[in-house]
Image 1 (cartoon, rainbow, N blue to C red):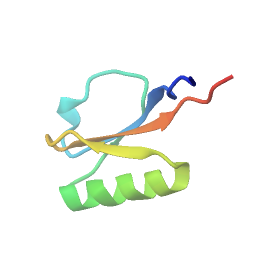
Image 2 (image 1 turned 60 degrees about the horizontal axis):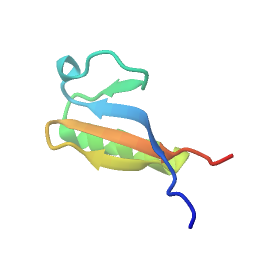
Image 3 (image 1 turned 30 degrees about the vertical axis):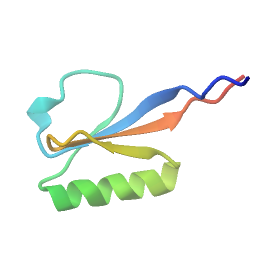
Length: 68
């Protein structure tokens, strides 16, 4: 049985920059939820990432780690 791919955080898109502290992923700050969703959509299309809405003004994007 093959192992499931490991998702890694790729980026954070938020309307509240104070909610994001530190970390290794780039953070994109949007002025409102419409712009946040637009930025997340385009990043997902460009990078084949998956968006996860945390329902607190923040969306995280993940990509599956390639297997060796």
